[in-house]
Image (cartoon, rainbow over the protein chains, first blue to last red):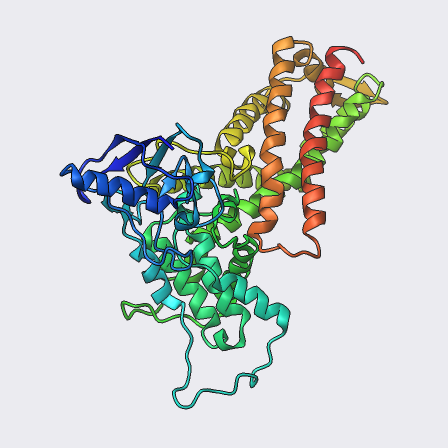
Length: 257
Length: 227
């Protein structure tokens, strides 16, 4: 296969980036998208040029590290991660535009690599549960209906890749936050921090500068794990309930909350 | 920002909630407005419409609701403006070079443009009808000894102009697309998303988005062509 690649190149966080065009003729339809970029980088290194920087890790679709906005869609034309996208999804001679995730809270570090630590900070704000140390509890000690366990598991499959933010016209992180809140709100283990969690996580999401949801459902359509916007509705319910019925949270600054 | 209620309503979720609640109120308003307008289709020289319009513009209860309605329109518009700016800012300094419309419905991505069209229509519409009725001089007619302002004649005048009818119908199209996303979206924002009633919300929402603007648009068309 011979492809024309328009790739976003940016030397550093504060540099002005631009698209550079590469003609890549060593592409096999069986390569994954990332392997295709590996081959391009090998060629660039041979020529003494700077290779294209991009995020990747497990290459089996479970770590959430790979990103790339390919031809106007996060993770490209299939609803999967970029590492699980293969070149057979493209036509010979096609021009492919590759951009980094674009969101103010996801600043570009270099080329196609963006800083997604905003997600970590949201998670740290409330995406945890309290457990007693000691021996592992009996697996069947707490009864959880199958349906609820399944629903929580669906939410828990979120790998935090940020495709929802990239896909959303508002760069909203609502699906990510919804998945994290929903996962723990459904389970008895998450009950102790239930209200505090949603309050803190939504506040952190807003503080990071993500947009607000307008229910276009683009996130759901592009999420490699197929997480449903039904979780966003649950996030809303959890948030209303928390804001209207919780005890006031002590604010971080030590004020009266 | 220390008050919990202010924090609630100024959060991203809280602002969505206000958009949804004001939107749903305006949806209710459309039903009331349409039921009044449909009386223009009576072949009675505008009598039933005029009596209805006189009642609506003089009744204290209705006038209170009307003030509330204006407040909600203003809130809906200002909040959407604020959210649009905020949401555009969230994308950052650089926008995507290539975007695809495959993952969402056109109307859902263009609520701002559609809403602006509806707002422009609203201003023109208020100037010609509401403004005339409340601040202008509408000639009166006598029904069984009761002096009633002849708003039907004003409507007749504007609905005989082709450009006005075209504008009206076009803007009802915009309203239809706005509702196509807005109706169902409001329920999602309220957190009402469940397999038990999703089908009902979807069906009623889409049907409403087609039928209500179509009936609104039918009235000027019928009056223009004397159907």
